[in-house]
Length: 470
Image (cartoon, rainbow, N blue to C red; front, side, top):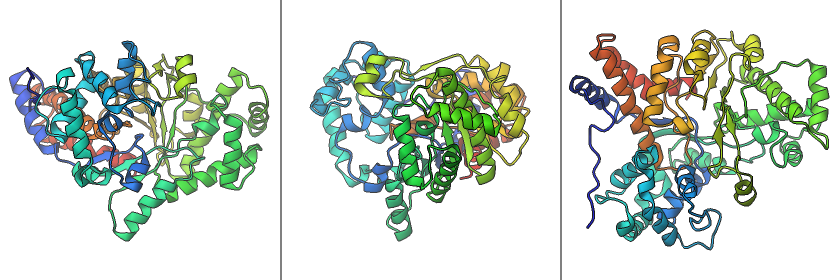
């Protein structure tokens, strides 16, 4: 016997009747606003080639580490799910997902997936073992139609702009195809890149020296000398900006920054490009380069994003077998006050610079991040991120940062996802949570409802568009 699947129109709104009525009215004003997706990891080849997605597993299971990390935690092998295993039968992988869907009860992944099943594909029965084949066949059949090709879905969900994330050693060939399609009038969707220099900034990144050699080839500069290395970054940043980039992104283990003299930096660069790199030198170089990159952003206008505090690839066996981004990154405690002082001491007072700061350490919200963003003109706070991109995570963020930083030192919502159809689902969750938060302020007579309506539109659309210069 199958169970019905339906999405309650009041989901995530406050249970208090007065607040719920206000939240409904606020949400009605923002529900259909276009989506600004200023930072994410969707594949630009989807929009360049506009090829149909192959099947349900390829679209909804394989790109989503939120999903397969939960399954892996319960002993489901990644090979059986088809993760980097082309021999796996996608229908069987999908069945494993269906059999274990109960594991996602109460999680944001369950909420996003149910939205996709009900809203995107019109399915009205619950996803479970008994309905696995029904889901797989229906979704895969729809994916073969023109209405479910990447560009059509982009348009269907009112996505105004998506920023993908590429490294300086990426040629951006897919973005070139998209730009040509825009220029010819073939398609009007705006897909831009963002400059993520981790592979050539982090001396502990796999293949660091060969990455520098590739950077030299693409830039025409000697990236194995410090002066050439900086020149190579400037050239690649300029190229990314020509290809539409408005931002950079930096995924460092910590928020450490440093401001070295030219002589100190050159000596450090010689050490980190040698045969043996100490952990201390690697950390100091990353710290120095955050400050250097802030200076470059002041020069070229690219918005700077800092995403610190993840212990990447915590599971060494998994990393050896499957590579990075397979669900084994773990949050760590992160210091911001002391770590950011060298960078902010040099550039924090520059109103023409925008640094958007994220955290995986929620204990820092009220103690460090909100006071910093509430003071330095250059600093803004990114939304609740990654493990905290959830209803409760979003509420905690608003509750802890608003009193000190206000709303306008934050930048709206980022979906930060590889799973394409979770984008509208995630934005819907964020809009509902923010409308509920604002409804409480209105009900407590701390804000007029017309102000809350303006704020709801800002949080849903305007702040992200302004902060990322979109």
